[in-house]
Length: 129
Image (cartoon, rainbow, N blue to C red; front, side, top):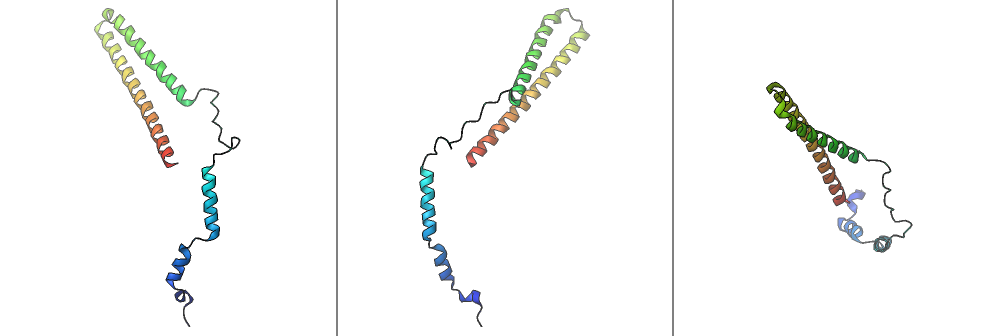
C-alpha cells in the first residue's frame, strides 16, 4: 500500500497553490477598488479635539520657564549685591548660584531628551504605518 502523502505529486500541489482562484481574484479587485476610493465624509476620521486643560508637556515647559526666570533673577540680584558682600558670603552665594545653574541645565537637558525621544518615537510610528 502506498503512502497517501507520497502519492500526491509535488508539481500538482505547487500548480494548484500558484493558480489564483476566481474568488481570490474577485476579492483582490474589490480591495483595489476600495483602496482607490476616498472615504465618505461621515466615516472619515475627525480631528482629535483639542485638550481642554493644560497638557503635561505644557505644564513642564511652563515650570522650566519659571525656574529659568527665577535663576536669571537670582543671578542679576547677585551681580547687583556682590560688591557689598564679604568674601564668605560672596563665595557661598556664588556656590548656590552655580548649583542652581547646574540643576537648571540638567532639567533642561532631561526635558530636551524626553522631547527628542518622543519625536523619534512618533516618527518611527508614522514610518511604520
